[in-house]
Amino acid sequence: MKRREFLGYSSLAGAGFLLNGVWVPAFGQTGTATTAGATVETTRGRLRGYRESGVHVFKGVPYAASTAGPNRFMPPQTRQPWGGVREAVAWGERAPQIVGGEPAEMIPTDPREAQGEDCLVMNIWTPNVDGARRPVMVWLHGGGYASGSGSYSIYEGRELARKHEVVAISVNHRLNIFGFLDLAPHGGRWAAASNAGMLDIVAALEWVRDNIAAFGGDPGNVTIFGQSGGAGKVATLMAMPAARGLFHRAIAQSGAALTATPAAQAARTTEQVLRRLNITPAQLDRLQTMPIAQLIDVMRPPAGAPPGPGAGLSFGPVVDGASLPGNAFDPTAPALSATIPFMTGTTATEVTFFAPDDQLRPIDDATFRQRVKGLVKVEDADADRLIALYRQQEPGRDNIDLFLRMSTDNSFFRLGVDTQAERKAAQPAPVYLYRFEYYSPVREGRLKSMHCMEIPFVFDHLEAGRIFTGDGPAAQRLADEMSAAWVAFARTGNPNHRGIPQWTPFDAATRQTLVFGPDTALVNDPGKEQRLALTAIRERA
Image 1 (spheres, rainbow, N blue to C red):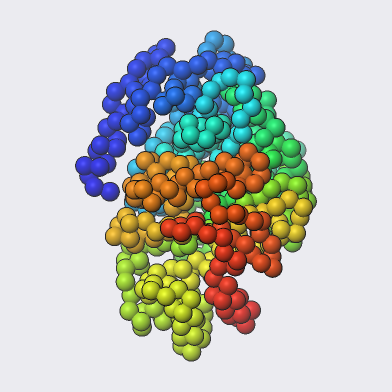
Image 2 (cartoon, one colour; image 1 turned 180 degrees about the vertical axis):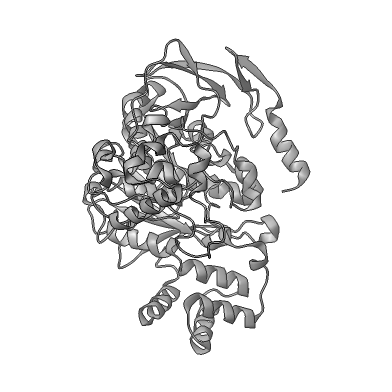
């Protein structure tokens, strides 16, 4: 991003108005004017937001109590009522985490709001706080189970509310060690201390059920949607008994959760944490009084530790037999959500997001062959055959483009998403599969169709995402197609609308896929030959 663009982007927050002692920017992050907003009664107390481009916005809305002190690692607790009117005009805290790792172009979309344990908050965008019953779309952010928040500018639901008449919500919840340290096997007061981060999301959905009608939303028509780690959270919720009935459609973008962490593995991680902190199982109470920074540091690799699995601790949902009785999508799709319509898909070059820039530049034939050999663990002859197949099936693409597409085809992004679609298709409710084929012009085109690229299109908010998506009439046309499809799905469970080709549900035999791109089209089994070739190589390994 050019320095002048960045300064123009960030300086918009310089003007604003004082609302009962709280400073509200007079312009949103993309320069839209704001004014004082409505007051809404909730089960915990009254909230006052602001208006932006005709949309009512409520930020930092608490849906549960602070997770600090005795609530740390425990299931979310009910928020005590507050008196008077609470101003909901600024981001709340994000969960404690290690930040960074995204491509440079995405950094300005992250407000880097303050971290803290009073992080069980949501943000709401609604066309009006009337008695209408609009579809509700609840966004679960990416960042795995380790980082992120619902406050990125590309997650703002303003345009979904303004253009598409839905209530859009983004949610913060506990992450990493704070959300997924499994202490339940220690029993006693810790018996329910498992999957706290997922139970936070359940609590948010319960809040939506109990309160969203006051914001013009329909508690009987709630869609959960998320990308990357957020997609994994969507899949996990589909297998959680406590979440049953709290949502009615589900969308998983560029991510999957076939299996969760086995209980035995989670127990070993907990043992490592206690050992690094020099705590015995009899001293677990000390975990709730330690400084946040100390718990964050314990997740980092110890000084001098060799790289590899286990050097830095990772956390995620665990099959605890209670909050999560079994794997989400293994060996089959969850029976709990058999009647929930499902939509899922991937971008064409997911892996571009994770590659350093020097790995995205043009490569010669010899380098291409070496990278393919390393990717799929084959010798020269098999690598040459695979390269020839990709060149035949994808004419006109250069070596680096073909390698990035091959890497994505062979990654868990594509394989996990396809497997979830196959298993979900065996259930009564429909599943719709998509492929996102837009290539960004940013960074001289090297970002291509990276992981996260589709998000501003789904939110119809290219103004916020243009620093990595680019913009223009073709991009906006695609945003129109995608956002309308997501909203149609949220409204009825069917993504079809007049602006796209007829999108038929996926089945494992025909593998119908809507390919969003310059010429959006329904394609049966796109990349079939490449998929079969990679499958054969994996099966021989």
